[in-house]
Image (cartoon, rainbow, N blue to C red; front, side, top):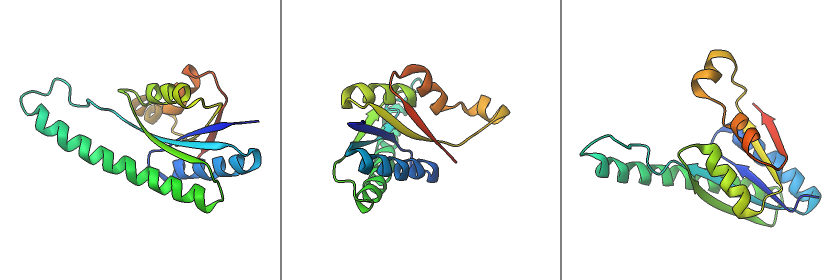
Length: 146
């Protein structure tokens, strides 16, 4: 039913719950799983003369964080018996844009992602990546709640 399941991760416990759910689906359907992490490549736009130095430090730290999250997800999927696992780092000023591009490039036909379940003012201030993904993609999205 599902050929390629995309699982966006951010290193949180909630995203690892989504990885576990995706593992079960992948085993049931014989699916490939693509795990992705999105990095904003230019978070310091307009900061000034120290931009280049801060940018390099940021990218190094963000890449290390991405690799750690992807390695943890790959290990969990492998331990669960999923044989076909790919990982990728996407870029985007908005995380949902990076996820949308990954759906297209990976040929994903299902997204399994975690949601922290924020409500009220916290949701308004912090936004909801999951809500934005639901608004821009044209494939089913399974939301795993905190």
